[in-house]
Image (cartoon, rainbow, N blue to C red; front, side):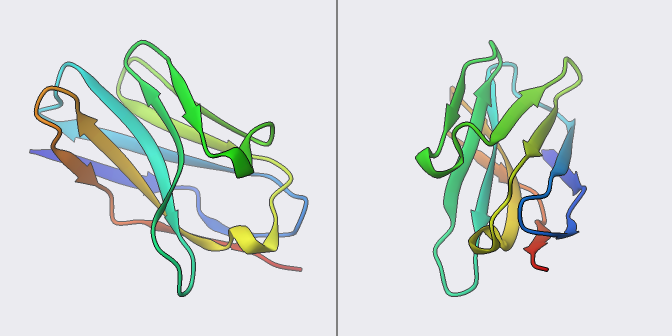
Length: 116
């Protein structure tokens, strides 16, 4: 089993910055991708960004140039969010996907509210 614990959510003003962290523990699949998804009020969950073991990244078009995903060797993934917008208010979920089995693991989510 894999456990994911997110931290770093909160209230941020439009145009501000926030950094989310997600630490994975347990039996972590050797080949995996980690990422962030978000679900706003009344919306479906959507991809924000992912990063593979090898560092290959993928971003939603809406966040390119403003958000940066990174990970360390201890299977912690980060999301640096800059110039955030009110419409990005959402619960942000950490994800780890086992590439071989396609099994997804999810964190409990962390609330990000963008408001003045």
